Figure 1 (cartoon, rainbow, N blue to C red):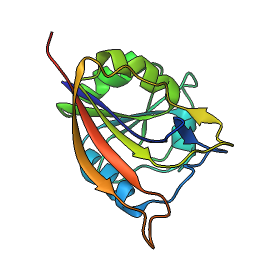
Figure 2 (figure 1 turned 135 degrees about the vertical axis):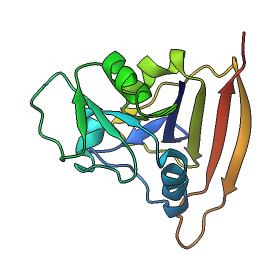
Figure 3 (figure 1 turned 120 degrees about the horizontal axis):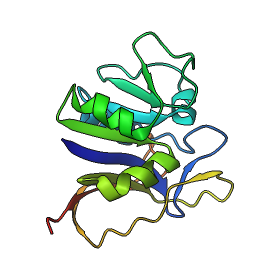
Figure 4 (figure 1 turned 45 degrees about the vertical axis):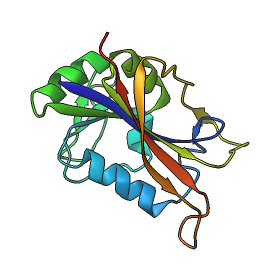
Length: 166
C-alpha cells in the first residue's frame, strides 16, 4: 500500500477558516480531483462536514468515534485511523489522507508521499492549521507553479514529496 497526504495550505500553514477552505482556486481543486480520483480517501468527521457528501469516483472513508454518525449512502464510517487504513487497502493500492489536521499528523510518519500545495497568501484569521512537517527524509518535485489570474486570486505552488528509502 502507498499512503499519501494531499492538502493545500497558506504560507502560515492555515488549511481552514470557519469550516471552509479559505480560498477558491479552480485549478488547484482540479489537481486534487485528478490525483485522488479512483482511490480511497480518508478524512475526519470535520473534513467530511465541510462538504457533507461523498466526493465522486472515490471510496470515501470518515474516521469518527460516533458509530452511528450520519453520512451519505456511499460513505463508510470507521472508528480509527488504523481501521480506515485497513479498509482502504482492501480497495486500492494507493490511499490518500485528505484531512483534517489531526489525521495529517497521524499519517505523516507512515506516509510514502505528500502532495502539498502552498497558496501564496497569509490567512491571519484562519482557525485550522496543518503541522509544519519535516520533509528532510523526502525528495521534493515541483509539479506546478500557478500565477494569480482572473480565476485564481492567489498564486500557488504544488509540490510532491516522496519519502527516500532509508
